[in-house]
Length: 248
Image (cartoon, rainbow, N blue to C red; front, side):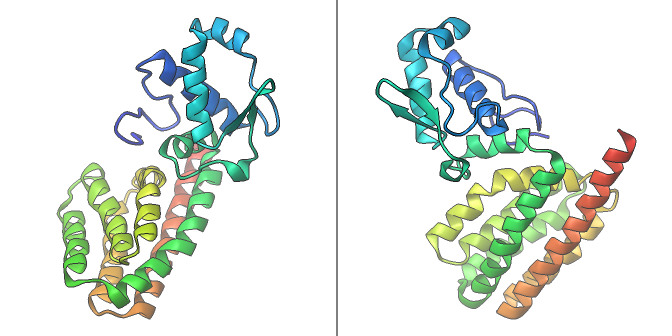
């Protein structure tokens, strides 16, 4: 499953366009996977430069990227040290992508669904209360795109847009940002759920219930419809994951 532009299939490393990108990806994956643990030092510069056959400036630039993502802290004479997981910038697209790659599928699904259950019902309720007519039309247009889709691939983008536009309709820039940052993880979740044989037939009425509540400007119904959609999506994903385990 393609995670985003510039990333290759789910659980496979992205195409590496430069040694700088390769170093960032490799060290980032090692940190997020737990191969390099919190409070542990990265391998020293000399060994990393030798391993990747790069100069110290190239390596240091890669380290600065990891610092910016909250994965390491660079200390004079001590080198780069892995930070605690709570300090990582988990909504950074690269960090989130590495997390998706390294977590077992069921753990990833449960983590994402927990976040969605906290975030999406509240966002939908707020959108139902304060969204502009223009914002509601944008959500309705995304749903129309879902209706018009004839394949799971065609369904993906309007489905993502539907959820992203609800967050945008809250009128809160931070909520909109969170909704946008969750799109990468949500993309993988939708692609996984699309393996269900009835994904289109199941998805449409769930989203239509949310849309109807929004158009009726009914916050309680919007919250409840979103909770139901997430609960039933979780059940669909469990069926798929159980099937994959059974066939392994």
